[in-house]
Amino acid sequence: MDVTEKFVNIAVKLEKPFNAFFDVPYTEDEIYEQVKTFKCGKAPGPDYVCNEHIIYGGNTLLKWICYIFNTILKCEDIPLLYRHGIIIPLYKGNNKDKSNPNSYRAIVLTSFGFVPEHGAIPALYTLKECINVFMKSKSKLYVGFLDNEKAFDKIWHDGLFFEIERNRCNWKIMEYTFMSYKSASAHVQYNGLTSDNFSISQGVGQGDQFILDANAEHSITYNIITTLIKYDLFAFLETYVNEDYIPEKVLWSKIVRQSIEIYEENRWKSNLENRNELKRYSKIHPTLCGHRLIRLTVLYPDAKLELLVLVALGSTAIKKATCTLCNKESFDIIKHLIMECHVLLTERNVMFYKIVDEPSIPKYVDIFNLDDDDLLQVLLGAVNDTVYDLDPIDWSRMMYYIAKHVYPMFKKFRHVLFENRFNFEF
Image 1 (cartoon, rainbow, N blue to C red):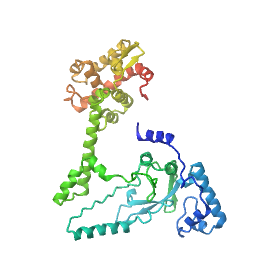
Image 2: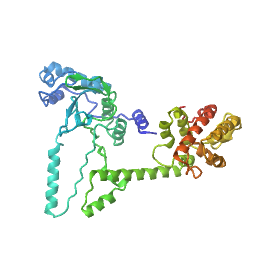
Image 3: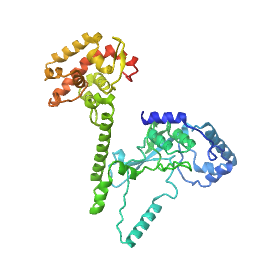
Image 4: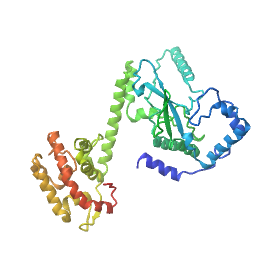
């Protein structure tokens, strides 16, 4: 189950206890206290309502604003207009290429500012005090600065909502956050020109605040220490500290990327090895990199569907099921259908003869002398000892012809997979 499915399940099962902060209607006095903090001269949003309109709108306007927010609170829905923003691209300067979109900072007129009392000055004060303390004790101080490129723009919405729930955030906060970003849209204004509206499927506003429940035990802030431990990066940091050497950004990025790849690769292999139903798949696709057959769809676009069918067949778990063609029960239905079912004998022979007749397939004698398990793995894309020394071009061509000849047979038995509730979309 992926994160999106988990979030949907969580949203359905979410308990909604009473909360004194969110379940009590807003008052006009509360609205007025917030209006007093507004500043004049600010650009309006897509509704062209300026702060001055609200500041000088009087009690009647405050009454209607209070009514709107209480309606939102009661209905748990945020109007689409409130989810739309106007993006103004601001040039970053420093002689950056003006034709490159990355040389501009996207400012949304409706976005919030930075979190109060959490700007650069308090951070610099904290850093300065740390330096003073360590200088007095004549100790070394190591400071880590984290600057993720386009960090706000790349945040995955479903992952964010899942993390908010996992940290036991109040359900109303979660609901409003979800509604704020669901169906969010914007348009760009630049040099008097206005773009079409477009949807926003990732990213958050810079300065948006996510408030945890008072009883929450964890922070939403990404736990860097846990990550360093998980991917075994502390050993590198200890070496750098002992040697008084801090690597350049490019080198450190390479080290982090390699450490994560090694960890995830080992976890992938361990999961495959410990699950008997994935034994065949572990032979076909033993690494975490992109599937070889999927890469072939670029080389052979006319065989994209056929190659994807091979990928699906190869990734299907070894599962006990009944073949409705011959009414036999098999402990490995994929192997039975491709290699054993007597009803498909003619189609199977035609498939094998056509593959053998392809003059461009070398070593076909060795391939077809394999036992059924090993032969099936090769047919589904495995690179075993028999085909390991094949030229990559010869192997690619061989898989092209195999995909072309397996597909007609697949069309004969795919209904069997549906009947046994295999998750096939072909």
